[in-house]
Image (cartoon, rainbow over all chains, first blue to last red; front, side, top):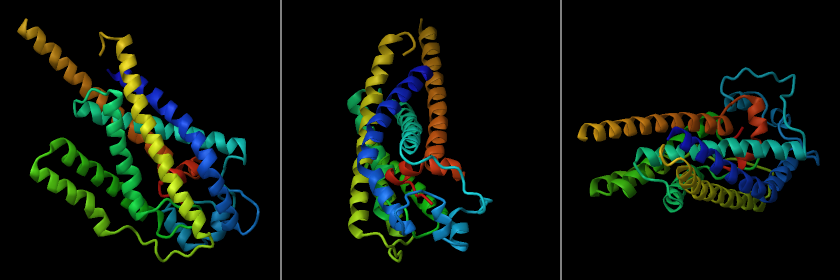
Length: 247
Length: 58
């Protein structure tokens, strides 16, 4: 069963990464590169050595919480063009396999046999938990539009994703009056507590660019999860057929 | 016969538990690496993915 789960997650992560990388390169990466141009104030589109120049001193230290950081030597980053696309693809693959493993773990833990339909339903719940719900408080950001310190935003993101996932579980799977009520409270609570403030952020970025990025980013995220779900269910069934004794 | 079936059931449950724990462990590790790891090189490599998938970035 371990082998079946690992192989299905690898296959699903790979397929989802192929689709999502294509979408990222076509839809979101051009906007990121465009935003970096505003961030640096030049036509130069290098990604990160520009960040220290923009966020001097304190904010940078907050944002990178206690990490020892050599400002003198710029950190390694992939070259523009193909290397950048390849590393984006690699990161998408790592993230996709990770999400697929978590999807499989949750489905097996709940005793649900992953068919494509069921895995798709769980994947949509995954998208709502880690994509949609955190985006309500922390809309997908372009480089150069960040506000609150990174650690705070990551903590709120994690808390919201966990609370939403748990809430969906209580509502959709436990389905008792009490658990539905508890689930609703869990889903709503992070938003009442409030995300780290973004309203005060000032940015040179045109609002249209940021809005387009937010919408496209959610769309790419949804497709990413949908492909993970469908192909995980498909691969789980296929690998089960090949090794019926181990299923 | 009954004993055999029960043993098989228990093995299945243990196997499933093992698979769940292992997959959750690796899954969290991979998602952390792609989405949260603070190392500059990892951050830069995963930069566009993090922005698109709405992980808090820089």
